[in-house]
Length: 363
Ligand code: SF4
Image (cartoon, rainbow, N blue to C red; front, side, top):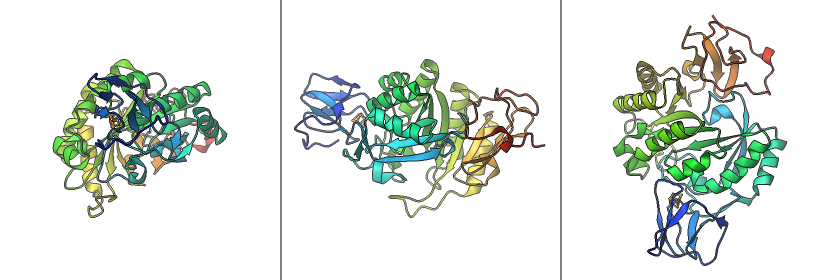
């Protein structure tokens, strides 16, 4: 947290997630870092700051990035497959990952970007034919009041809302998510091992992530997917992946999708190699061994474990290449067309696909 006062007047919009500690400091409750912020100072993320004993979301409506993506890119593969989403980000983040692929956005610890009201943003998303809004590239809970305002309008226009999140959140943030969020993908790194997250992310441990997932599961209807970035040599422990998979199985259920993602060198870790594909395959095998029904490899286009297989008869349910859907073998109730197994996939398939573009069952 910055110790040098840098704010002299309110900027952005007053935040809602904070409490006055009555000791001259304000505690932000938007994320688990729980910054205690003095007058004129900003929190760790750089975009929430105190003026006149009130907390302000300094970059309310300041958009750093906007792009149309397939939902599969998030990665989300069990919610509205094939949908086009309007991906947005502000600056700032609650984490400081040494391998961040979006560091020019997330590690910019100040308000920047083009001003867009929630109404303008949703209108743009709808104009481009997007079916949802994804809050992504930086941690969305740091700008949650803006996300909530966008999300409510998006919902009123028939669009869904997705967080691509580190899950390092609070009960207060989860309660706000409940107002508008439909889907979340929570991204572990190095399977959440304490040594790894301390050294490469700058958080004490992953406990808050597990608590957020429990709160989401128990108190909301938000669809949950899990990702785990496997970093070679320093964050690729099979024991850790097994521990995480077991936790997901026990607490979120066997139908929760989990994606083991390939690491690519970036930012301060340009000297690290990409994750070997065999390493990812060993992680997938561990995930399946724990009983999880949907275990994926991510960031390896063309790998067979990008596709979804029926837990009942093992037929290909959704065949993918990268973010593309090549086959879709589910009926309108997300059941396997071959054996009738009811999957956890939340449909329908995006309206941008015509039914007959996809051949049915692959034997
Ligand atoms: S959202 Fe920002 S200011 Fe608030 S606790 Fe997290 S890092 Fe600190």
